[in-house]
Amino acid sequence: MNQLAFIPAGVLAAATSWLVNGLIFSRAGVFAVVYVAPGVEEAAKTSFALFLGTSIPLAHFIFGLVEGLWEAARGGRGWAAGLVSLASHTAFGLAAGWLYRLTTNALLAVAGAYLLHMSWNKLVVNLSGKP
Image 1 (tube, rainbow, N blue to C red):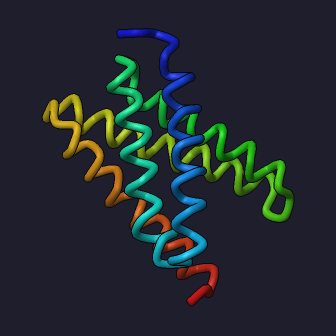
Image 2 (cartoon, rainbow, N blue to C red):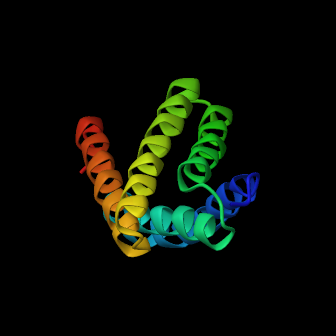
């Protein structure tokens, strides 16, 4: 296993997700936040980790760190949103890593993490009161 490749894996996943999600959000709004973005992000994080031969959970952690720093830098929800991002993406990574170790099937690992991420985003959107 490439020990430090989790750093570029997480950063590449964050950059890819930022670009793809940016194109999608302008057209699909809340639907994209709940149903599309989790798929884009989970596929990117897990795929880059596997492609670079590194830890799935650590790649997800780096993604969460990048997103968390972005949230904190944007202001508004600040550091609280950043810490939640870090914690949630780390949890999704632990689930994806566990599923991959259990099944050796990347699609099942992504699908399991996607279901968790989609459920989380749905909860957050519902709690925020957005339509």
